[in-house]
Length: 212
Ligand code: IMP
Image (cartoon, protein in one colour):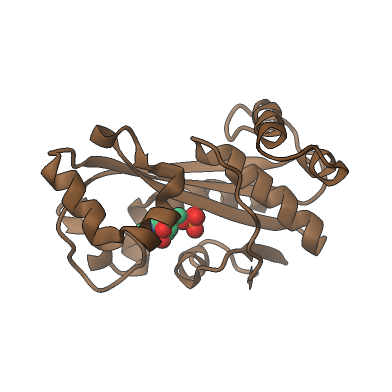
């Protein structure tokens, strides 16, 4: 049984299209401060694995607006709950900076080692994550131990542009993110999965996990 660590029911709905035996686990792990998603996901997977002692995936995602230097990026969650998605849309459109992408990193940890593969990355990233973890937190025994666990990372990216909010489906920034003429909030879950950052990352993960 695979534990999908998230407090977001929208993510679980999307993951169920790819993974048969997935259980949602409501575990709110503390996020690292980092300018990229990979170390945040890896740290979350290690922390969650240590907490529940069973195979876990965590999913860290963010909206990166090109003309705003990647804002809100890893701070997407904070910005959604403070500014709100309508104001993010307004800021991007006023600045004439609507090109954007969604990124998703799925991080898997089951306490065991994996064979290194060129893609998705594991071994190369482990050092980065350890370095970020050490900078971001006091190096307690727990941090050092948790940071040493192997994690496998799977990434997915979807290009698009920021528009005025449209559509009732999805969650988060979906109403203001348009891909191929429709916002993600105007798509059914299966349609979103077929093109989305999360769908791409989950497909890579599911293929690897099946062969494991
Ligand atoms: P997190 O990965 O749960 O930390 O999400 C970061 C932020 O991005 C939150 O504000 C989410 O609502 C938003 N987000 C994550 N995935 C998606 C998505 O697929 N569509 C729209 N917003 C998303």
